[in-house]
Image 1 (cartoon, rainbow, N blue to C red):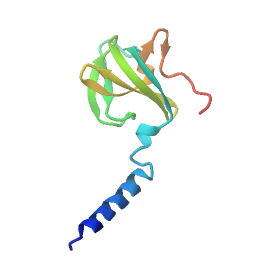
Image 2: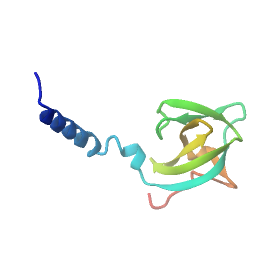
Image 3: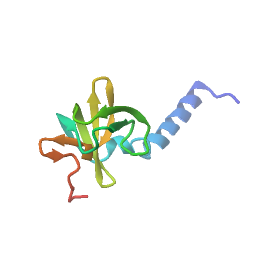
Image 4: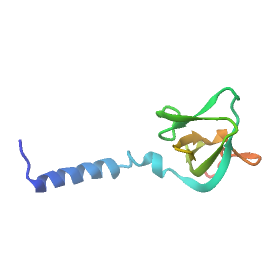
Length: 117
């Protein structure tokens, strides 16, 4: 079975609309959230343990790196997903998502209750 270039483009466009238009692929990246653009310290877990940095904002997502407690990380933004905040962070070459309850900025964590959700 062969398709013309015009048919191939139509098939690809239809597939893109089906995937991206449905919101399936965009769910993680477009959830309600807020920009932080500031530093925070890793906290609220045992000193011997490491904070897992995940590919996507979910506890079942692939682990891409780890960071020790008390280290400074750059927080780009946070999203509110299933009642908890997930923050996109960067530590050197390591980047990904962590649960906001493990980040501290001054006396506050990034897991405050959100009455509008």
